[in-house]
Length: 183
Image (cartoon, rainbow, N blue to C red):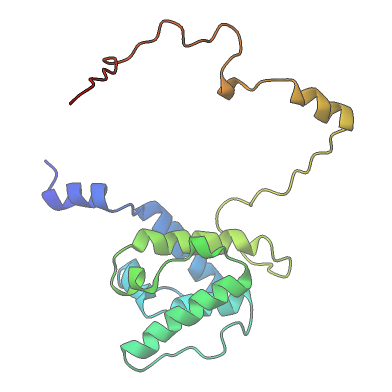
């Protein structure tokens, strides 16, 4: 029988342990270091590993990584990491909020950000290391002639319904409206 915590975890959390393992293995391959022997979210919490990741993908994108100091310094690492992600080309909709990792509120969002970085690495030809996730699709531009464009104007799309036999005849929903004068 499943514990109440396990049931809550499956419903409330969208964490995927397999994705987290894949993200961790990719980060370790890129930075050339193993994660410390602590849980995934704890290893990433201070932002040091994430900053090292960005500096390996794009050398010098983060000028100073805070390796000591209080919580403020570690939160600064997360802020620098997020700014570096945007400069690297990661869509800002894929970035986690600092509190997602710091307070461990949404670790799934952290993993999504790491996969977004892995996809963005495909767009950087200078990066010769490993990638994470599938290659993003390329542009598939289409060219149509004027005749082809005009031919499409006469067609009613199926999502608009049909123009054959559709009327409101016979429809009477609800009670009819009665106007009573003098009240």
